[in-house]
Image 1 (tube, rainbow, N blue to C red):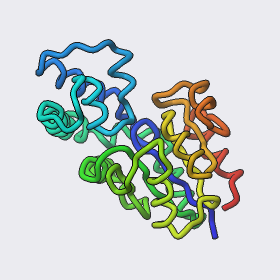
Image 2: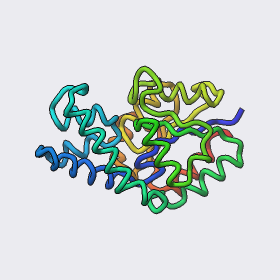
Image 3: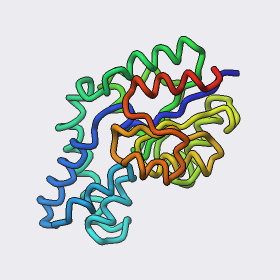
Length: 220
């Protein structure tokens, strides 16, 4: 059976981190909270609940955090989603088509909730390229735990050893390692190449073209 590829979404398939940061900044400004750039940047790739618990310095189940999450979602839909097609990293559609032609199982594994993930993938015109979209909340634990990756493998009818994880964040690499899957980091997203390697990346690719070449080395 062909090796499956599990892709992170934000910063790996679609260049949304700048838009996410813009929306975080707007939400924080509306509630009168200031946070250093490094603190806001560190939330990229995390679930919204964990992000706003950190940014607002309140429990994740607090009313203020829940309001911030809903405001983020509304602004993201208004500001980022309409530009989704333009935000796809160059070369990604061709890479996905090539992998599908090889018979690879393809999944998105993201820290976004299902509503937000599917909304973005539909707007980008990518959702039909994937056999499964695995989102935060679908398993007991999110990234960096192995649960989401293992659920993706199950949905694709693969063993963990028959999957490779592709992502741009430290938690993507840690998830892959904990799930017993090879971890391919992409250096064009959020984390640096050194951070990705330290988190367990077997290789770090600096472009989609390099990623395509690296995936050719994985048994189809």
